[in-house]
Amino acid sequence: MSRIEAGLILFGILFIVIFLVDYLCIKLRYLRKLNGKKKSKRVKKNNELMELSYLIGKFKLDKDKLPIEVLLPVISAINAFIISLVAVVVIATNTYIILQFLIGFILLIALIYALYELLGRFLERRGYTK
Image (cartoon, rainbow, N blue to C red; front, top):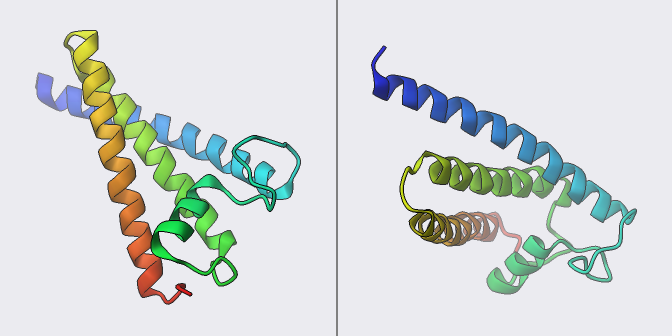
């Protein structure tokens, strides 16, 4: 096995482990927020998630039509994917720490914008607009 193949296998294993741990932690946190067990500054008075309020505001979605039970795992998976990919890329980058922070920040902002834009457009096409 070459060095490149070993690196790719390590990259994949590390990504999967971080993704699964993040997904479970994020999903449990969202379930607690929606059930109202833990009060947080990020939760609005009606226990609306910050991601949902962004999507509702940007794409003019109707929050009464949105299937929260279906969106919860999707939003959890998106957030876990973003965190996992940025973490693994920054860890795999063997360069100066300032450059690692810069790469991580740019990748983080780009992934957040792109993935939530795709989710919002998908929800618009499904007819969840006002």
